[in-house]
Length: 277
Image 1: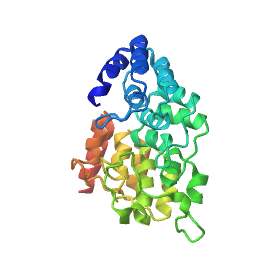
Image 2: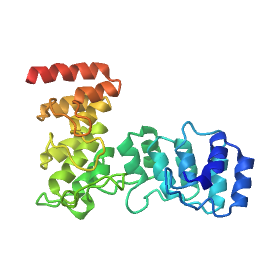
Image 3: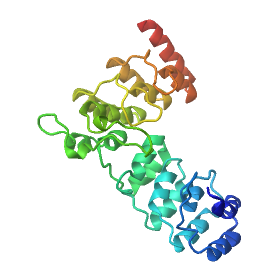
Image 4: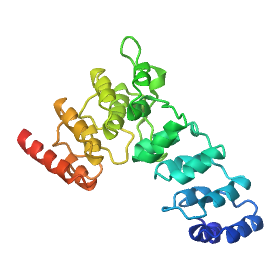
């Protein structure tokens, strides 16, 4: 963060409530100020520190009392499974439906934060588009994203990601092929076979690498990364090609499985790839 924030960052890192309160009282705009580099605000810096400091909740209270914006930090905390921060921010009134561009549920689904996904659903978070519906396996919502002709409805939404600077071509944002494939990746990552079936039956392409991801791979890549053996078998049965490389680091689904420490699955995929070749 900018130099102005460094003393406060040090206090946050050590969990020093007294020192942090002193800094907030001395620089009265510090809690709402935005940095030009790194974390945008002190609250976002705090909730992204893992493991959380013992005094996390007290520090969040201090920042909230000084006017800190809560929803963007909630979204950030959702992506790293910081359940304590998520719980506290929701209790303070952070918007579970997000900031209008992205939601805590989408963030948790994107980054694989299983504990936070469970907590958000327990607190009645609802999927707001096709990708989040596919990720949580909300089949009714998935169905409502299509009309009687099979065309996408407005509920399906458009391609987006947590990274505002991630280039998504405008023509891809609303492209049916891209939206379906993007949602299929979410279903694959979270092992939602029924949702994946609905998407494939409505035209999702099992080997398409969609927009909306920094590490852009096929649904098979994401199922492999998260160790979803049943989903891997399902995707292979629907024509998934284990020889396709991702477009970020040019590796195979088996390499993604190994990266996720799913070594048996990695070997299974290697054998399947060689069998197909």
